[in-house]
Image (cartoon, rainbow, N blue to C red):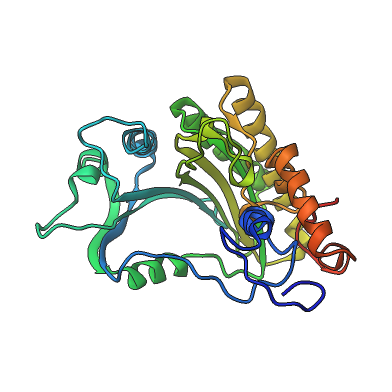
Length: 317
């Protein structure tokens, strides 16, 4: 629904400017009342997680990097497996200061044989682990469990950065995370309800024809896997807001400096994970930002969804 109250449909062949702009434009153009998308047929998936000993975190990161490289669109590796989703590499810190790490794996085409899919067994099967659990379930059940691990604290914070799938960058990002988290405990203060997490999430390549600019500013040069570095924090008391936000911002700044020096920084900022001080729309590039601003002026002449919408990121800030 547009600011005028008019209901319109946006598709690749109808209101194509809105269709394109909604890919990354969030609530900048109107109220989206329904979305129709293709999806996979109802199926079972092999899924689960393993909790790691600290001494094996480097090996887990190495295996994750290897899988992303092997399953990339340009890979000719005979072991390539497009059904091996993820993995997610998660590092958490509780209010006690204790840190743990886990890997979440999902395979969307499990075979009849028992045990791990080959693509994951060769990568993660040999890791030393504190605990692991894997099984075959309906997709909805697997996603329900993963969703249940989300934070439900009274206060929440997200921040993110995107980097190329570079092993040294991923190793150093973890080292920076560990170093900055220590600053939360320098005065031995206990942060009530703390759950401070660093997640490495694969960003599948966006397929863009040579010479063209695709959604959110991606180009054909981005046809390789990237990695989202995500900070997600939950805590209880407002008095700890500045401490948490400062630690998060310091981490992002150090990641940026490190990745920029290595030539592995990617400009894209995933809007759903962005902190309020980040600028995801600008990360799409000047051309895509100007395109979205033009669509906004065309379909929302009075700027209702800019000046009149509370919260969120704005195109004209």
